[in-house]
Image (cartoon, rainbow, N blue to C red; front, side):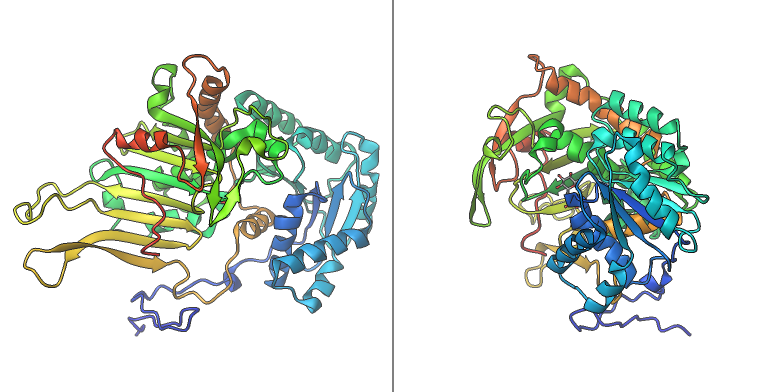
Length: 526
Ligand code: BG6
């Protein structure tokens, strides 16, 4: 008979007792992809150094790359295989967890060719390397990763075809965000890609979908019988999704000045997380069915209109302030930012999903740079009790229950409820039932990019954004962007907020005028 209590050790050595007998998965359960290679365009860039190469190195360490796997880095910068390897080595060392022996092996699979994206004859270096390396190693299968500025996505997608980089097996194209800058440009890019690729070959990245705790939203909702009956307008008062960052614009002002927080965080990450919190259960946990359900949420979003925009949206830009005791300068004084920049670095939004389950339940979304703490979380705020038995003994109503899904930094699920305080006859206190996400799990976890690279090699598109989802989220947001960027008297005002705060006071008002409050980072209970 199975042991009813699972008593594995937690990473800090304490015995954990979850009481579940469900077998834990480990990366050993991950599938190694079929033979393939990867050509990464934009290989001299920051994303490749900070995210993609460390992700590939980790997959290599976990034995999750196919045997003959190799990478051809390609970019405008002139570099040799050796200098590309040296750059990669430096960034892996800086990231820590570096193993000399493994690196010696892994580095042999890295190559570099320079290319001028608009000049298709310059792709011959990549073609030559593929012809030389692919036989016996990749079975003609190749992932092409576009980690370049978006302006050259279409050009490279054509270059791959015209210079014959596609092999005899499958070809897949990973496109980094932003996929377009509004509905029109996103649709134009899509049609351009469709001239040479079909939807099945296009992998639109939203790295939030690759985060463990974001994937966990569906597991929590649909692998447990206790939440789903409550997950609707009868029991949920509202939902909050917050993604607060302490980072500022860093060295990305060129991009960020054009994008702002709505394109950078809402069009993709925030709306995708919301889809997971709001979607219906698919009949099977299978890529297209899950993607269908995510898309249905976007289709049900109530569009904003010009008249009530200020009741639904607050935008802000950070001014100077302090984070963790260090001075932080005003956004407009960041390098490369216009002195009179109108780019929002913060937004708070109230949304409605017009369907049976969610009618009348507001979703409050909030994201900003240079905020007090880094945290991303979904809060399901339940309704209060219908009738308070304790009204004679208590000064007020017991507050509502909340389920908190903290995505980062300290991943956990928390349920807030009330219990009797020992002592006085009628004395309630608020308590938190807390599940740290790694409890009972000793194995290695894959981070977002590791997960997504692996899934693409495996041909699993569940965690990638499909074209209809991409178009719907742009369609929803383009109305908002137009209202902001047309700068008429109806346009939302840009409020200044102090770096190191939780955004402008007007964002508090947005939710407070509905009689609610933002749930901030649980500093006391984490
Ligand atoms: C990126 C945005 O997509 O997500 C960045 O372009 C943002 O501006 C980042 O900082 C946040 O990701 P994470 O994983 O750090 O929450």
